[in-house]
Length: 482
Image (cartoon, rainbow, N blue to C red; front, side, top):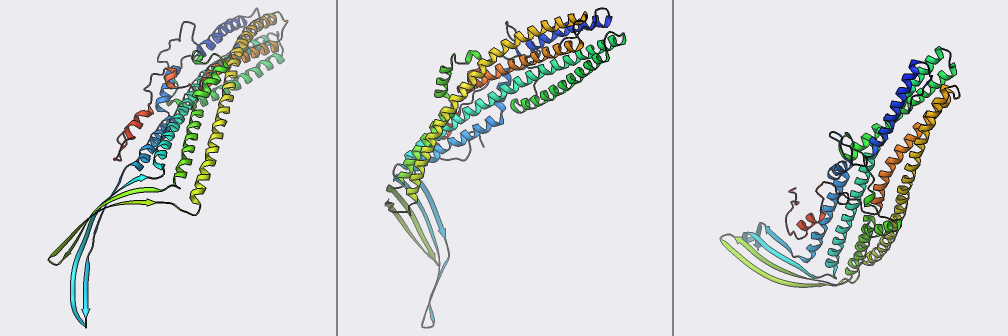
């Protein structure tokens, strides 16, 4: 990242050394500006976007999160559908027709009558007992709602995790592009100095070729960095919902993380939405077994009917009113074995749900261990790369000074410069990885949410919609007016 001083006596070389020192100071500041705030707090940037601001936008506008919210609202409707089994069913029937009666006796027409029969009836049916299927179906629907809410929590974690990654990728790739562009500037200055020294016979054509090759490599690396930044910006636009502008530095959310791997694992087993969703799925499957078994039990229902029969014939108008109340008992004896197969199938599905819950527990435990290790590793990497950068800066300064007195070649200087660039790239990458790993660890414990991060958003409460629809008896409009 520094300009190599090609000679102690030429004016160009002196200018190159000044540029090198300026570039060295600038490059060191880029790392701090690109990823981390100073100890006194965030760096103030005009119209800057912060991590929390970007995540708030992602939380509010993410299509993935909004569609999962819609799925949760749809799941809420399973409860009023299930409770309908406790409510009466009312049916109104109305018929009207035309009837002609003609009687011929001994070749003579004796009767010729036209009539208009009409019937109006209302029937009310109430199930009194159905083997407990209605109650179990209601409880199953409630478990389905809870499962859907956990899926919503998981979707929220996925969106916020993707948002933090996209944010840090743009910061990282911006810093890397700046480093690569700065490196190209330094290599261009180095090539000019080498060509000037070649003109006066201080170096050979080989030195010029080596400088040209290094510049070409630096330009290719800058092009790659530019392409990577474009990709990261596109992903940011997809996840956050708008183009990134003046992104502020971001810090790891270490204050929100558990203090030990054991506490992280314990917290995850209790709070992770994937585990909770799997446990609710077990409840749904267990209740399905009792629902299927309830089909083997009798069903008792009562039906009340009021009917008015009218028959208009000529000038006569006959009316007959009937009221009835009927209780019925239905006992299933044999249905070809379908009901028994349904019970056996439900039991197997229950076993599958339990195994899935066990699988989720182990998957979460493994994810926590991996996330914890990744976060701790990034801390050590940053310390190592910081030491490496400092050492490589000193080494490059030394190689440059030795090259002035002929103890080092141009290739030695170029190699030292490339080594320093590589260590700075590694440091930027490690700093990005630490922030991303902290969010990943928070998600692995099941605690990554807008509320936990303190985002300035209206937190979506799925219970509001549930309370609005759970006791609705009639109406096709949703609470939002659709």
